[in-house]
Every structure is written in C-alpha cells, then in structure tokens.
Amino acid sequence: MAGRHWLDPLARKLLVATGQLPPPPAAPADEAVERELLALKLAHNPDLRLRDAAEVRHAAALGWTLEVNLAAAADWLRLPGCRPDLVDRLIARQRDGIQWRDPGELAGALQVPPEQVLIWLPVLRFARQGEPASARAPVPLAINQASEGLLRERLGLAPERCRRLLRERDREPFRDLADLQQRLQLPADLAERWIGRFRYATAPGPTLPPSRSPSP
Image 1 (tube, helix red, strand yellow):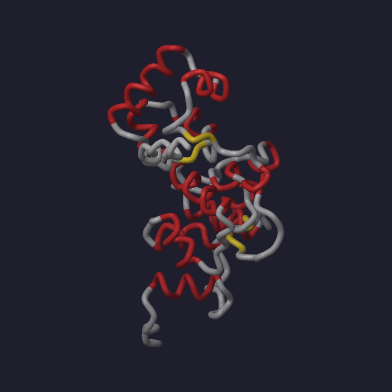
Image 2 (cartoon, rainbow, N blue to C red):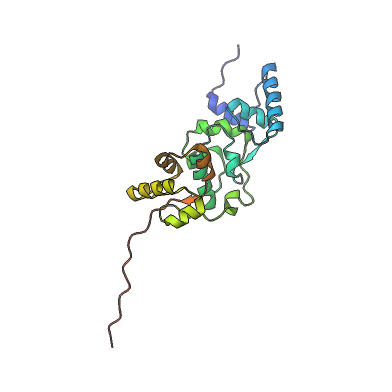
C-alpha cells in the first residue's frame, strides 16, 4: 500500500487548488449529481448563496469565480461563512488601495483562520488589475461624527432607531460593523445593506482657538 503523503490535508488541498499538485480522482456519481443540482439552482437564481465547501467546489467546477481584488460586497456574501462584518472590513481595505496576492494575505486582512479562506479557495482568483467595486461606491459616512439629520437622510432610519444609535455612540464610539450590528440589534439584511457605508474613525480631540495677534 502506498505511503501517506507527508503534507497535511489542508496543505494538500491548498496545493491542489493552486495547481501545484494533481487533483484527486474523479468525483463519485453522487457528487456529479449534486453538481448538476447546483447548476439547476444557479440557472434559476444566479445570485444563489453557496451553503458549504462542497457547493463551493461544485460552483468552481461549473466555472463560477470570484476576483478577490475586484469583487463587490454582494459577491463576497455568496460565500459560506462570509459575514457582513468580514465583507465590510474587506471593502474598507479595498478603498485604501490594498490588494491581496494569496490566500494567506486575505485571511490576515479578514482576521479569519486560514481554514475559512481554504473553503472559498476553489473559486478565488487573485488578479491585480482594474478598480474594485468599492472604489466606485459613495464616500462612506463618518458614523461616529455624523449629525442626527445626516444619519436620517443618508440611512433612512426611523426616529427610535436613530435615537438608539446616538445613545450608543455617546456611550462609546462604534468600532466596526459587527459592533454596530450587535449594539443596535440590526437584522442581517440591514447589516448587509450597510456594508461599506461607514468610516469608524473616532472624532479628533478638541482644537485650541487660534491665538490673537497683539493689538498695535
């Protein structure tokens, strides 16, 4: 019997996905059936969200890809386990002009275990070209400094939710989308609509008035 490969399973999957090792034997019949079922679902709903690693593999086999440095928030949300707060973090870094060259850099930017990115890896592409979708989005709102009127105008908030936001902000500035979602108890669909909408830098400290020149 052939000996086991010295690489651990995660490393083997990574090298297979990047073309440095040959792929495993052909998928069994049940996987082929699952792939065909996914193809039918995608034909019916092109924006279908993938549920797990198996569906990511099937989507890759069907030709679906995600360009890491160009993709919009809606594309990232289709990946299993890619929460709104992770996408918001990624969009913010895109706006800063950051691009990623490999899965390790992406995992570090999102602050997730490499195993999470490995699940997405079959569909990820790391081209470094073009302008990311986030760069074409409106200028993000400074959530920790914006006035009540501006918050209502830009976000369409109901008065009670806006008052709660202001109370929470007075208590402590919001750190990120995850913090905002938890403290305001936002439903998932609203949190997704708010991806990339805010800057979370805290307000600068008070400034001294300019000194007056002595009278002549």
